[in-house]
Image 1 (cartoon, rainbow, N blue to C red):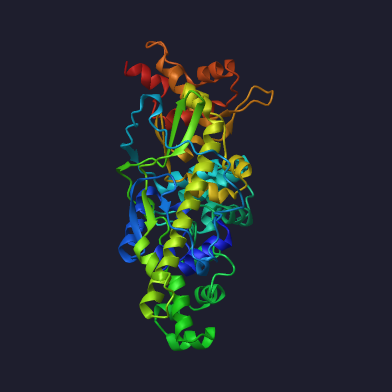
Image 2 (image 1 turned 180 degrees about the horizontal axis):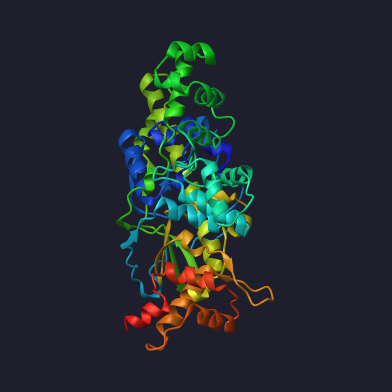
Length: 473
């Protein structure tokens, strides 16, 4: 589960402004563009919300809370209890020059397979499990479903050298991959896809047991809109049945569809990394999200505390507005804490470039900030940081441990790829470096990698083999 039950349940039951918020979708997983759209819809539907002048780190501002609304906590934890001890230095994005960075950058979209492969690189698996996982990823279609029976995948792996591989072992790897994002991926049919998504909701989500049973046993009756059968078998009245059906229909039957169209789009970074006289700093980008506040005139009307229908309407919307603002503040706090932890470990990259990238996996950050790995995956996907070296998605700074000099050292796959690129760029034009020679040169730098690994990285960089490079020069 990506977030504590308290946040998911309250967002799902208190905010009724958009379908996404109704169904306990964490704001953490939304990109800045998607979150802006959510905020715009909230502004249009809730008279208690309005834009504050300018932008701000917390993107929230409201008058002092009334006693009747005291059940809303001061903080919403997105995963675990923690207090942000970082001092507020302001945006500071411009550094000493006083000029803000150029935030407009183009970012290429990523395929579903690429996103799944990235997550695979971030978990601890042995070489045999990795080979099985890669075959499973190859068998996932653009909507996120597994298109081949496990027996066929098993047979293909046996032909690749995994002799005696039982279907059970393939299934064990599949169960682990089904925990990947987007939730519901690697399902073998619609029923399994929806059950995977329901499994991520808090156990105390209203009507969750009935929704699970509906999907598990009565999906055909739901498709046929057989309400009489559903009410009888689920022991629900009309209103409760509507709510259970709404919960099921809020799920995504095509979880991979968001990655179907890969293109270029302009992005606004969520974070800014800059250097000043005190060293490296990471702050929220003040331009990423609009600043919200509670409409003070309507709050004054609510304080009359009469029993009129109009006043109850305003109270309900005030409650919803405050939940949204607390959720936004919690999202910002989590994003900032994770971003600072990542960049604290990648200062060498900021100062020296890709070749200095340190190995880093989700578990490293999850342990440091006391959050679940799935939360870190959500925080770092489609969240961007502006650095002096360019704009990068936060997950770019993760790369698996590769190679070493036999004394416990390890190098990130990103750094090794960068080193290979540099070695080839500097090679003699008439005598290109073979993959075997690259292995030797990397070993001189204390990087022990196999020739096939060098070949894989070279091909991933789009660099031809040495014989082809020689022919084209």
